[in-house]
Image (cartoon, rainbow, N blue to C red):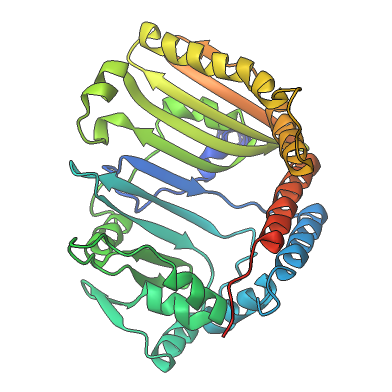
Length: 360
């Protein structure tokens, strides 16, 4: 009997990759939740092709700004300060957000990554990063901590959007070190709630069984986002549409990257208009890409349309099953790398051609 139980558990783990997603600590009342699983052994991130792609992208980006530090240098700076290896295929995140009646967001992020708490604390103290308190747990101001890691990250931190004029100043987002493999990133009040939920004091979100088939259909799923309409602020238009929720998942199946987007409605009659609209847009997309043959097109326009055509080629016809509408896309991993590389190369060329700001 024990042998059969072990065999059943082994088979279940093989066919239910969605169970790799760890939502522990993510409050169950969040309207939108997300998580990633480990990508060890996956072609999308843990393969020679992925490493070659990253190296080429680094070279392209480095050519845009002579003073720009490479991502490798930034990763080394982060590793030196915190012990975190950003390229580890074992890193995972989970989190979510809630919206109140005014549309204000609140939420948090749980980062599962091996790190050195002593290094992190020593770095924060040496750089005089402001401390924050979440209950009994001390943390650091996230924006200041990010700025302290490297010059390029400091520039990125300065670009964070500020609250609108006249709006009350928002509570700073903190980074709280729980143990050698868990960090919580959230405003202190929400961090207290997340840390309590991690300890079992409150219900954590769990991927509903009805969502698992869509997630599992991607193969080895490595990213998932779910939306629960019942936890969104009341909205007559949303209520009338019959929309109940949605799940988005990305996974790897053999040499392909597979995307699934499923929306759920209160009835198949409510689902039908969405299915028709989605299928109509897919049918019209190739004609829109073709453009007007009587008007001249730049080489850039032609290149963009070619890339969009490749992306569209991977999208399959919309499927309907009762109250569910599903969009599926499938792209060969190496071709997907190629498309992404072309997009970045076009962006780099456009940035180089743009007028440069005057220097004093």
